Image 1 (cartoon, rainbow, N blue to C red):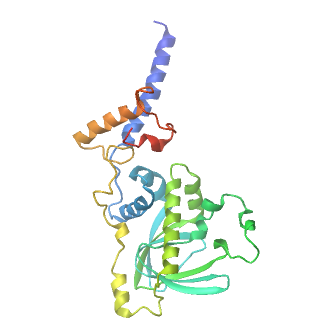
Image 2 (cartoon, rainbow, N blue to C red):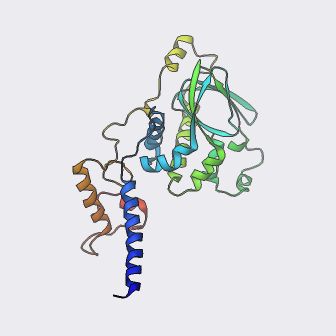
Image 3 (spheres, rainbow, N blue to C red):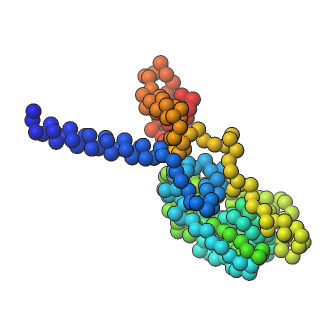
Amino acid sequence: MNPENYVWSFVCLYLHGSSAVRLLFDEGTVEMGDDGDQEALWRFLYRRCGISRLLFKAYVAPKFELVNMNEGDRLDTEAYFFIVLDGLIDTKQTAGGVERRFLLFSGASFGIKHLRHLYWGCSSQAEQRYPSGVTTVTQEELEASVYSPAARVFRCRASDLVDLSNLPVARMAAQGLLISTLADIAERKWIDTPSAEKLEDEEGQEFKSTRSLVFASLDPCELPPPYLAGAGGFKELSFNFRHILFTLKAFFLLPAPLMKWRPGFRQVGVLLLSDF
């Protein structure tokens, strides 16, 4: 046998074998931190954008850090985006010469100006489309400090949010944060959220000890099918068989017209559909 055949056989085995091993590792169970805080952040994002545990652990979790703060501590809103895990945050917003104060509870996110590139794009001239005198999110001044005796917040640097937004596999996380922040802004506009001065002590104590249900364990109806890519459920024997069958079904479709082909087959999301 020609030695060249051995060389090419080894090269092909190495390339395909290493890819198969990588795929098997991706289907393994994704463990979060022992304290449960990282798990809580994943639930927060999963409920907003559906990001898998695998992508969250690999790309999103390293960008966020959990900070423990005490009453009166100030939050650097110019450099960071925040998600409130526990406690109350007193904020003062100044935009267009109008000042507003409001409290943010567990589950709130703020710092929308750090997400502006998601809806304006990367152009530095994006704000010029607005008439003169119109206040945009980049001109908003936001001061924030801890109102409760203690608080715990997740924070992410503005530059890291830009990286997440430009990374195709993690862009959904930044979009989920944008949705969450816009929802909080809309809620504050139409719902009378008390300011720090108006909140009674006993009501404040109730909110201080309450963590938002958005961080709570997922209900059975919320869980992704464990045999889908990145779900991290490749453990039980029954799921193993379902995973193999689903993969074969996704990659070895019969030619048309024997089976319906969906547009965008090369898009990752299409392969996650279970109703071919």
